[in-house]
Picture 1 (spheres, rainbow, N blue to C red):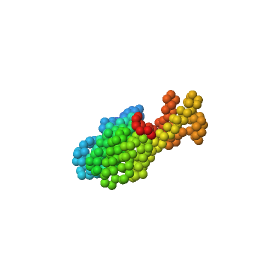
Picture 2 (cartoon, helix red, strand yellow; picture 1 turned 45 degrees about the vertical axis):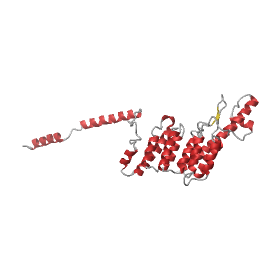
Picture 3 (cartoon, one colour; picture 1 turned 135 degrees about the vertical axis):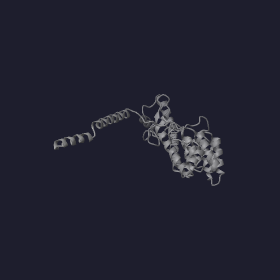
Picture 4 (cartoon, one colour; picture 1 turned 30 degrees about the horizontal axis):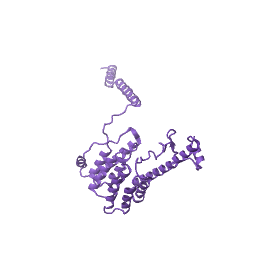
Length: 314
């Protein structure tokens, strides 16, 4: 074979061995176009699938114990963190979310660790908190705390049940009974008996409410409960200020036959140093039609607790 023939044959063989790159380029172009299209769809509001129940995969305490493989307390810690995050997310979401899984989470935590005091006490606060900040379920809060009574018997659970009856259910007789039962438990502070007597005598008054929260503020170590006590005492201060403002509005109307045009006008007429603000520094609001004074919805004091329609005078 002559040299020219060998060269032609070698070149033909080399061309046949070289892979074709055009199909690969075409495939890359198609994949790139598809990726861009998918991103456009996502940017226009497409949302990834979320399971209907993404928080709780287990609801049975017995099943959770078997799955925990003897690491019950560790599993309880994990589910407690989930419960706190769940509550926090829905609290930030306001009225757009429900708290339907909160009690189930707390029930699972306390089933895994029957002596998890924080889950009972803080969980009861979460459950009792009225909308929009919480689920407004004092009945479930009491049920959770009663489980703590059965499993532990600590006086603090008795006190907390009385506290729920007093503050959210306005059932002062039941509150006094639970405060008295708490006072009879080992290690209970002496002030609980006085609190039971005061609750029974003047339950529903702001002064008894103030005494309750002051005792919690001064005698409870848990930071969350102390913060709650400070917040509720500030709300009581706001309610006292509203009474003062309401009386001033009535005097202004009696003198002028109209509502003041602004807080500044009322402050000048009453010789106040400034316009009335709540403990958070937010000005109060007044309904021009009814003359009802309230804290602003933008204030951390809102909403104020509902007072009983009937009861002893303040």
